[in-house]
Length: 352
Image (cartoon, rainbow, N blue to C red):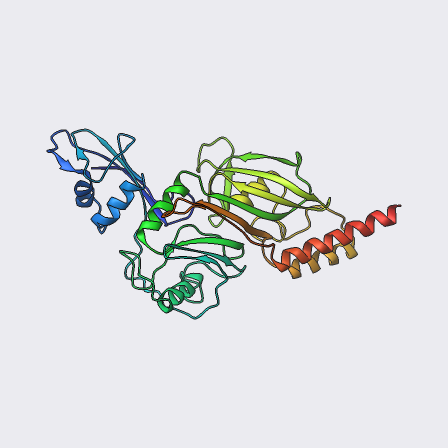
């Protein structure tokens, strides 16, 4: 029977699911792939075998082969990409994509701020997935098994108003192996962000379980004692200290919802212009009118959280080659940084 299920393993809500089976005491000998297929609705034998070969399906915590014969009272653990809602048809839309790499198995794209990743109630069209569906159809690429005809494979997500690199799987072979890398936290992801103030110490590690705020359901929050939420680890390093704000590099060890935004607020340095987590007001500086106008001008230049997924590193699922991609800081964040540099430089000149 299914003993446990968790549909939000790595913070990329709805993309993966985790199962744990314990075989009954009177089980007759049966292949593991056949047994799993009998107990997981809508999952093909091929997808199960891909998961086994990728190491995403284990028996008694050991990697196995698809023809492994199960015995009574053995524990099967499964981590697989979640099947999409087949009834949720994606309409292909000709939306420009900034493609940084593409082959038969995967794509790396750079998403602009403001582009929603996946259709939802408030965004039924005009999303990245609509754009990917059009691109894959136009390039005559095969469709991922189990997907509706125009459903590309999202390996992970970034927020609507976060810019930067995203990894897309084009087939089940790639999806299963890339998903395993996310589960093992071996995917390398670095973000650049502008935060209020100067973190002290200038580099360090933020640890604290992240879960939904019980008072405000649209927000995530840190539970420092770990009584709720899921383990979350962010490593940060200050790249440039501008006193009022800082440019910070964040490396994710886990990938929880809003992780960087929540963790930076937790240590008292919310992401600049982040309306959800308190970065859209003056956190450091004076109350004088001229300063307030300057900050408002910066908010107008970057009217979204100043957060950019700058680098992405992973092992190619087919070749085994280490892949690494880097994207430049977007124009809005660069312009805001330049304004703060000029402001701080002017303040120093007046003091001298």
